[in-house]
Length: 342
Ligand code: ASP
Image (tube, rainbow, N blue to C red; front, side, top):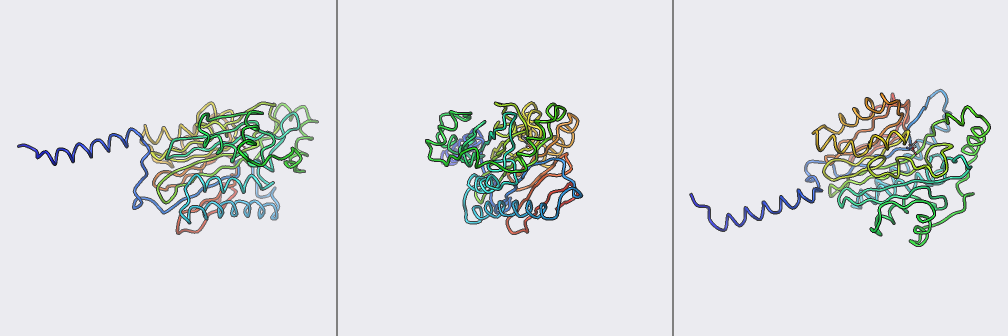
């Protein structure tokens, strides 16, 4: 049986397109197989007990999360892309003094605030990150500027600050980042040798992941890092593959927790790898990582993730994680403690 030349040509074209798209590797899921959009955010994981939190503080955290979620959802609803939505949500969390990012960052051992942030776009596979920056009002925007510039992926310290200022971003004095509670914690630790060796874990790193109307995924994370960290220390949050990852073939993920463990276990990329190479569904992959692997290492923390079909997972092995999510057409979910389930 001979195949007509026309059919052969058509078949070759289809095969070529399939080969090219699979080589590019970042194809969005068809609209019929996913919700219109999904946004998930976090404001850090840690020891959070209802009995130790005042009603006012609880309300303030919940409204901070709701406002950031609404800002990101507005972008997605009006057809904006996942990266823009992630940035919109993170900027609000950075501006909120309650969270350990931007304005509310913790102090390092030298009594300075030093921020880390990263972003990844699941469609283009591009990323940008900054580390140890001390004067940029919104570090996530500096990560975006690095990504847009395109020559490098990761800038740190003075060079990152100069680059961000040249890119037109707002720079502020250290005094802008002052918050009474973070300073009191710093002073307390400074005066207590025992705590100096075993610093209290902070809560409040922020992150966001999103799936947009075109099926594109994006992720971002921003933090002041660990309380009383050594000068020059970078955590997982600005490390693409540790604290942040997005790939249209699998998922978008943002992590929070004891950064050293998240770096050593390449947590964000491991989630993607489990899905792509081991064929694990999102929830199973996320649970195995956070509730088994990290927990066995005594690495406290959690992740938020959305996959290309719009499934959401937010496991954490601490007593709480500030978190919120919204799926198009559904009521938003906002929670703090482990026992709160959707
Ligand atoms: N992962 C952050 C860091 O290690 C801290 C956190 O998420 O609480 O810098």
